[in-house]
Length: 247
Image (tube, rainbow, N blue to C red; front, side, top):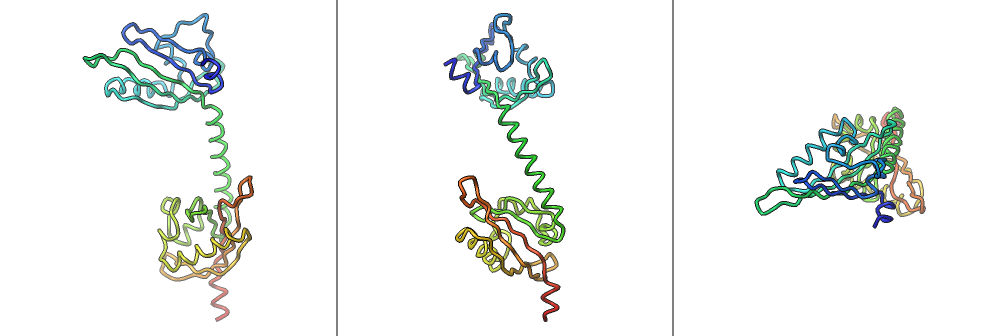
């Protein structure tokens, strides 16, 4: 059990509320970077390890769970003695006597620092990608998954359609555009998924003022590490002025 907890970076604890005695597994001492031989933990000691900005919130979660008799789950930070910050995910439940008096709280603490760092890196990359997309002035850019749901759009897409990002993300064309327009978009997307090749065709789309504009749209397949197509990247340029000149 000790080796399993070490691998999972998952420690367990038990608090005897009546006697105010805390029991920590070896992995909790390891996560908190505390010498087991020189320390006998209390609930207050546990709070002291928590990042000062998260301490009141964690304490509030625990006290509220005692009142409601409901287990709680919370992610929070730990502040190490050298100033480093760790992230942990905590789960806790409490046992009561027949009168409803809390007796023992049992919980787990799992370190998730690497997960948080990975999430932060992904978020930074997404922000960078969004910034690049937003700075491509005059070009409508968008990313859709295999089901046709919007994953990302740039600022010019919002300006061209009058549809806010909060409305588009997670929605399909059929949910935000008239059927004929939505079918047109989906048809070209499907060509990309079926052929695995870049597709380029003329599309029409409504503008906020109700006028229809012509776009030269290029759809690019996006693949994962196994070379499977997981999304389509669209780049559309408004060529309505050129179409008018042809007329």
